[in-house]
Structure formats: C-alpha cells, structure tokens
Image 1 (cartoon, rainbow, N blue to C red):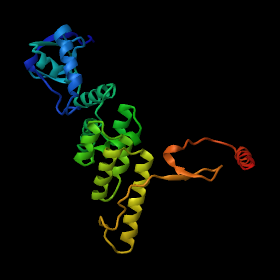
Image 2 (cartoon, rainbow, N blue to C red):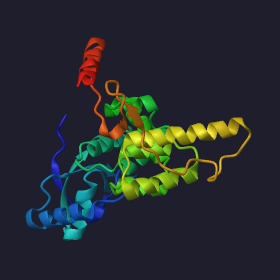
Image 3 (cartoon, helix red, strand yellow):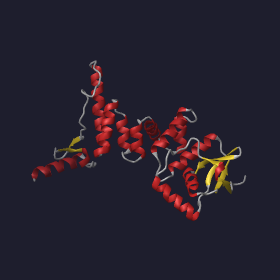
Image 4 (cartoon, rainbow, N blue to C red):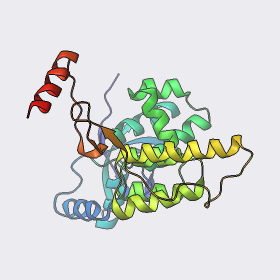
Length: 260
C-alpha cells in the first residue's frame, strides 16, 4: 500500500470542509498566515479527500482561506482515502491539536454528529480520547443561547463559568448573570453558587404552586462564603486555599491561634 503523495491542485477545485469544524477564524492569526504564505508559500500541505473531480478539505481549512486571500492559484495537497466517519474523526482530532480551538464550533460539530446518529456518545468519547464528561460539556455548549456562545468564541467568558450559568433554569436570570460576568468577571465558584441558589428558589416556588418571575427570584449576584476551620473567620471562597490536614494538626493550629 502506497503512502499518500503530495501533489499540486488548482485552488478552485478544493472545497472547504462540509460541515466546517470552525465557523470563523481569528482575524489577526489569519493576517499573519496570509503574510507567511505570500512570503514562503504553504509549508504544510492540506489533507484532503477526493470528491469526484474535486477535493474536500479534511485538515487545512484556514490555510485554504489564507491561500485564496494571498492569491495562490495552486496549493499543495495530500489526498487520503477515508470513509465519512474517518473524515469526521480526523477533522475533530486536528481541531483538538490546535492551540486556539473554538469550543463553540467544535461543540456544534460534535453535537451534529451525535444528533444525526453518525456516532454514539460513547463512540465519540473513545475516538477522540476524551472523557464522557468532556463530551457532555460540548453538548451543553451547543445548547447555549447565541449570546453566550458568542462570548465563548470571543474568549470573553470562562468556559467553566458559562457551563455553570447554562444550568440556570430561568432564562432571564441566566442572561442577567451572564451580563454581570462579562461586565465585572465571575469565578466558577461564584457561578456555581448562584446557579444553585437560583435553581433552589425556582424549585421552592414550584413546590408552593408559584411561577418564577424576575420579582421573586434572586437579583443580586452573591459571592460564596466559607468558614475557616481554624480561625472560624468567614471569608469569600475566592480568597481561600484548601489544604489537607490531619485532625490532630487542625487542633494544634487552633490551640496555637488561641494562645497568641
């Protein structure tokens, strides 16, 4: 069996991935890539599969777009023989290897493959070498409202914070807390704490036969507080550092504190 060889292809015969793993590219990175291609050409050939008398990109979508901008007429490609499922796996693995993966585009791609029954949840987890919790997180991202997905793609909100806020059961409160996270920042601990407070309030209202409204749900975003086991001081969770100590060491520390 012969290894795929590099060949030159007319750029007009090379199509973008369908569907693409990345919906958009970072403008600064794209400008740098275009400048590099104009000076040095494409150093890493695109990975493609044959589609009748055309080619479809498996890995190299950004290089293809940059080549068009740079005005190239021909580009180097390596043609691989892959079935549909292998194409999807190669695209996702290539995306995971990038230094700047877009979690939203990636999530939508994975969700489509699962919802279309191209792969099962367990199959994708195994093929990508990722935990089922990681895959579930990507499905959660795919279900987020557009404003939250946009903030994630633009790196304006931490992924952990967004995942916690997505679990808030009231849409108005979710958006309000999201806006606060963008404006003033928010830790994952704070997002989790407030998500729990809001959802508990919603459940309590439901049990009493009431409907959750902006008027009867928490409007103030609270910072979770914890009590120090040694000094009994109550402080914000973000200002603490958890350490493992034995019971005897804890008692000794308490006695030393009292003796001061």
